[in-house]
Length: 86
Image 1 (cartoon, helix red, strand yellow):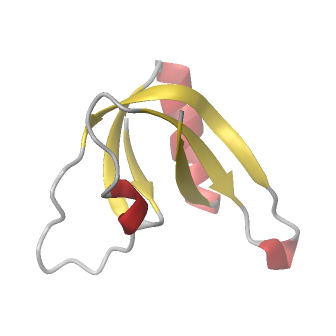
Image 2 (cartoon, one colour):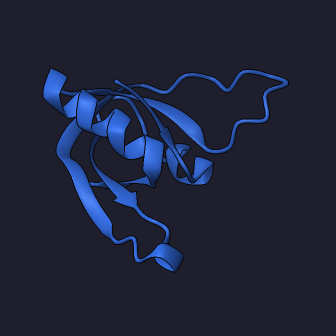
Image 3 (cartoon, one colour):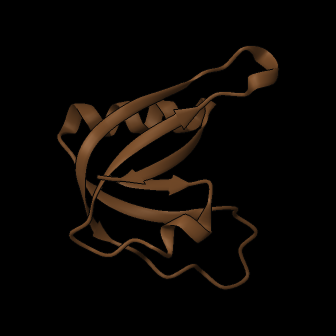
């Protein structure tokens, strides 16, 4: 599952094969709280950023079950995603 992580600097610390937890951080101004979306998933790829795009963060490809991929997509629509190394 391709996932856009809000902090590109954190993504630069990752390598394929690393295990991460993905955390969704809601907007604190609206009462959003942080919640873990998936735990211990494997980083499979770290695509190079596309030149000339204005997208923030960085893309990570994670190996997750189908249901987890759907949760990640849903969370990314409403929250900023972060990773923690396991």
